[in-house]
Length: 82
Image 1 (tube, helix red, strand yellow):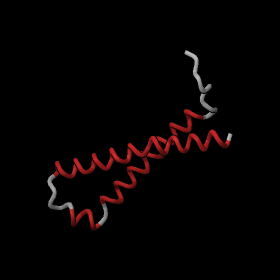
Image 2: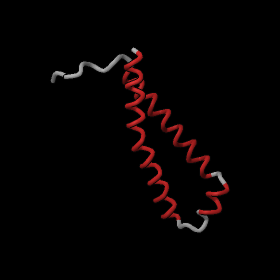
Image 3: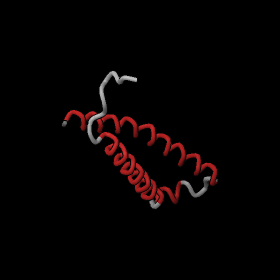
Image 4: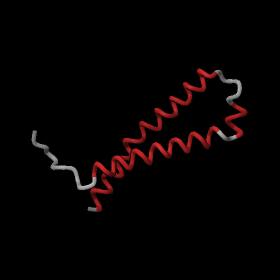
């Protein structure tokens, strides 16, 4: 199959891999910082474990929906610089 837009720029796949690693580290750090706040410990102490897991999964899903947009932005900036 012939690609209509040509081949990906050099370093494209490495950039995607590094971006995913950075995103996972960022999300882990963000969740850890939120878990350690006094607000979390005071507000969510009465929530059941199921509700906490549901809120966590919703937060994670929202973050992962934003991730492709950030990747497109980074790839377009990378392609524009080369």
